Length: 136
Image (cartoon, rainbow, N blue to C red; front, side):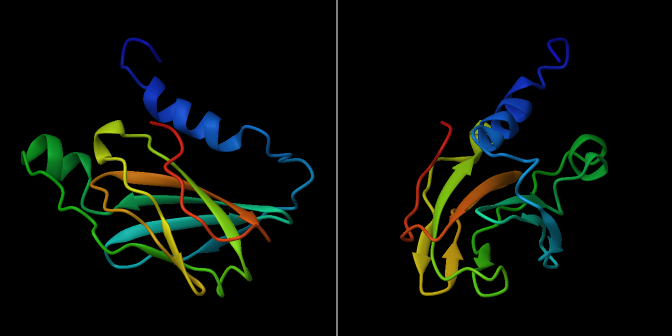
């Protein structure tokens, strides 16, 4: 990991999994992707994990063509689609340059902060809805 400096991405994933009993959650996969970003979710008994990734952030666009991926400014998770009535939301950033905004829970929608590359979300089921930035 060191020669390619991959630790920031793996650190965010490790932090999102900290304290999650992955062997007891009974995760079920869900694909809530849109035309602008992938949103792959593991829905568990007490926690759900979501990986959001900008579809424009591809090696051919960025490295070959020198394009900066457009910012995703309106990403959201549908709590009803996840079967959640309430959830505490924590965000983890594999790409630290993607900012520091918090999630905002309004009704069954979880509005996510703008990102250019991707986000990892941990949703703790049944907790009062709130946003948190998670890892710096």
